[in-house]
Length: 143
Image (tube, rainbow, N blue to C red; front, side):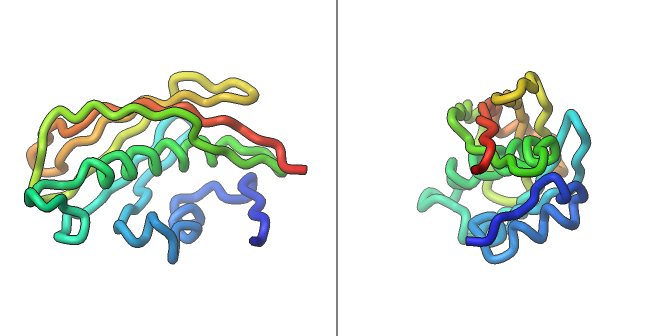
């Protein structure tokens, strides 16, 4: 696999292109904004990401939030660094069957080797809160 210099990937367009033909694009997740302290992703609800109950699958929600936080950590990487999610927790507040989910992630802690992110997931039109999320990213220097 080709190494990517994440230090040169800093725009939403660049980051979204990294998701092409990956799990992220399979779900339909798009990064919509990125700053040093925040990231926002969106996911249009479709049948392919629903659970058999007809509501959005919890894995789809968690993936949306993990992707926002991952892009947020990626924004801070230096040349030769990569990251890995080492812990995550999702509290599901509500369920939804249609619409677009928005995840807003914010940086809580940025250390040399660990980033901690909190995120809120809600339905775009109704502002209905769907989930709360926290994750920890480990920063790894490639050799």
